[in-house]
Length: 319
Image 1 (tube, rainbow, N blue to C red):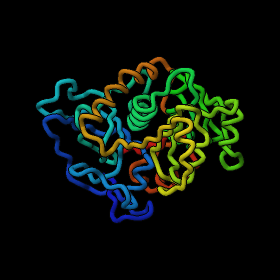
Image 2: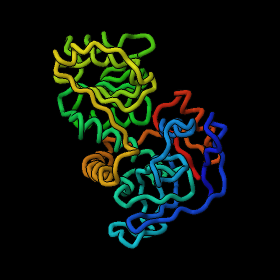
Image 3: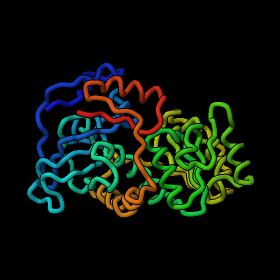
Image 4: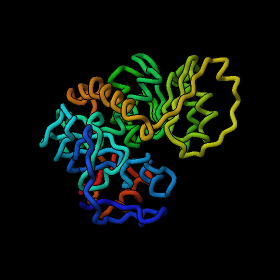
């Protein structure tokens, strides 16, 4: 099969399509012929040599895909050859075929094309596991998203609105997706704007992909019993913080990723996503936001676009 290979750590041009061996499948895995694979920021870090795949996983980038099941392991019960599915991957999505544990496979949601379904698994599992399973955002609360124009951001806006939260984003282009307050982080102080919009209280939950550069300002933006969830470090990993606000307002700081979780934990998250998010997609309340499609041979160009941040939603690769 063909796959995108990281020939050496570096800039996007190190990504090259090469002929490689077909993936093998275990007893509890399925083999998917890939229809599409979506880009994630973690892919760009892997390309630079900063985010290696878990031991035993595919060396090729790609954390989510959609496609048709081509083979199933002998212990697989739910899935059969010919099923149209999407899947959460530990790697290997930038290829014509990928093997994946059966517990990380989902049916294509009603109303979504097979191709566009590739835009859903990673963002849905990230948002649901962090914002709802761990930070427990509920109806009536306020929610601030940094990077609202990213794939995760656009999905988080829709899910939060679906459950009845008030949504703030530090992006100026998300009003059409349902954001209540859009803050231009380049020209506005998001802390001051959050305080203004909440009567001085602050928001209840923050989903942050910036890290160090925003840490103190995030603390300053939280309401009593507020929860900060960190999923990325685009603004660095080191910060100096005044801890008094955490104690005075009983704040919680959490962080997590998906890739290195156990198979059991990933399967539990996928199950919760199917139970809670798939009905919202089927009802037309939530939809994948796809910005652009690239052929697999243009993976380098796709990475350049992602790193430019001149997009809203997901970027997909088509084998």
